[in-house]
Image (cartoon, rainbow, N blue to C red):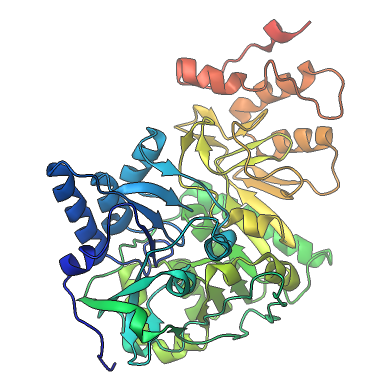
Length: 500
């Protein structure tokens, strides 16, 4: 590192940001998100509010961030609008209370929406780095996200240089931005391991307003150990994919895997890694979790292209301690590339994501509880689902101690339609929806995926409807949801009142 940029305190950096401006922060999940500067901005907002002055900023990120960014700014009432994805409890509460304006976006679209000007001007880019060169080369840390686009579009840049991440990370990132229409060309990725860009973000040094030095861990954490339910879901998915190989519908060499975030995703990857009929595979995904690093060490994952390393502190340290070994096996890309529909379809990705609820026709809700309360956002699930070789959605068959069926007559909010969803998996089995009519889908999902406690209710709904290509009735489609909101339990709906 050659220093030729002003060294600032976090408070001095925060003082540069004005009320009403828009800030693009690096990070994709808490991995690679700035920490000191957003916390200082939050403290400044509190002081301004106490003095009777307005202070809020627009917040752009790659995806969710950590408590020092989304959490601190939300608690300080410092966010005027937020996009494209979030997972912080304090921010979520403000969004659902109508106090913070939030708009959900497919993550692959976030960089180009920023470049196209759809989100307005970007006044500041605040980017976490592991190293910085005198020529304006920014070496990122544990994620890429939208950082390249924010740096290129922002009027000024502040770098948070985090010494928890070694400068030897140079070479782990592949920074590439496609040209905008009408000059866009194909993205030349033909295998998960292809490198097509630069190891650094290149910017004009004159646009870097200053550097804040820190030494803070990513605010990531590990996921819970597998439960009997998540293990069974994982086994069901692994058995299904092994059968697809045996039937010749998936190549014997297998295909790259995309996996969402969470306990079920970890369990599914673990099951894929253990299955004797599934060969060692590659990943082309947006998030790498601890399970992927374990599979790499066991030579069950050969290569992983991702947007972030969302792993526990111990796992990240093990990667950094063996950086030369992992540098040949992991590549971090901008989300516009990791989630790009063109590349996903070319490589033949098998996508595996988690649903909040699935209806009996295969429509998926992945964002809203009871149709109203935002959880996190659609994330990258749509990017992959709509372009996958095989699209799989997983969920446990029930929630809230068995009082909620995740299989319902009609989803209370639709993020992925039946036209994009091919496979549904719960702990009870798999529903392969390919080539099925709506009625066939419904009977298969009820029989194979629904919890036994809810099969009578779901079959009763299906039997009640007369006529139509899709056996659906709007007068009763949400009665399970209404029953839960009224009594706290979906069970016990009497369909007789709707017959005749």
